[in-house]
Length: 141
Image (cartoon, rainbow, N blue to C red; front, side, top):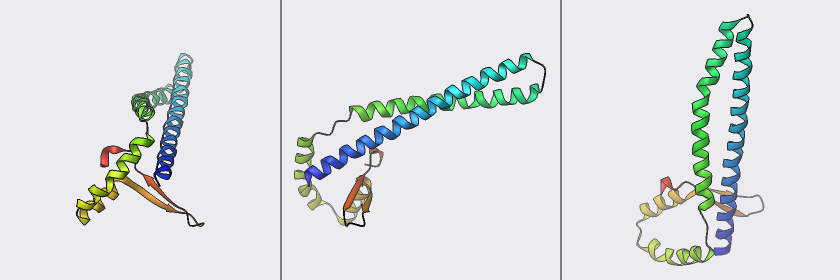
């Protein structure tokens, strides 16, 4: 069981890192596109035309910039934290060995709260395989 939990925790860690990196890559592309659009629109201002539309588009692009920059900073921090988080098999094994003693002293409602804090969902495959998906954010614990 410890090996299964260890493998699942590592699999979830890898999935989290891949999701964060994918979002980061998407935002960087969006930022580059926004910057290119702003340069094109600025160049259009030099030529007479529909300057109101151009200015509105520039304003919209500039409004997006702080949100994208803020989220990129958050993603960098989340990725760094996830990369620093190492799951030790020995630590997991000893923690799970001590878990029974803790479980035995918990009241039923405390047990429920603990399960809800640790487990995101349980997936049952058509083949009968049961997979526990643990929460990756520690804010609920």
